[in-house]
Image 1: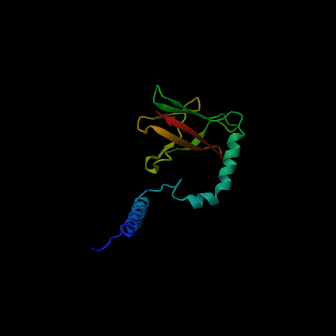
Image 2: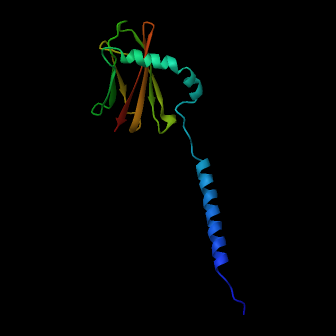
Length: 151
């Protein structure tokens, strides 16, 4: 009768399982979606000095932009600051969902007589949202960014 050793088979089996786990990990990792901050990230990075100027201009205003989530009324209330150039505010509000770029929303700025805009949140999924507001008043551009958690 031949003496049979089991340790070479055990080592081969362990290496085989290790290789199968690595292959499985590579397959799972390759199927994950990777959402960048934006699709044209590199082009935006080159023009970022203008963005820095907008942010500085916004921060230098005596009154700052405020963005408050009102859970009771299911809305986001954005109050724009009084600017030296008046109340004619135009621009865009970007509701950015970091965890899922497909849920991003864009709204045009339409303020009332108190420099406020109300955004309903019933169509927004609960969770973390970053709100990027780019606005202009009579040739002066401003930018502000805030975060809200919608429940």
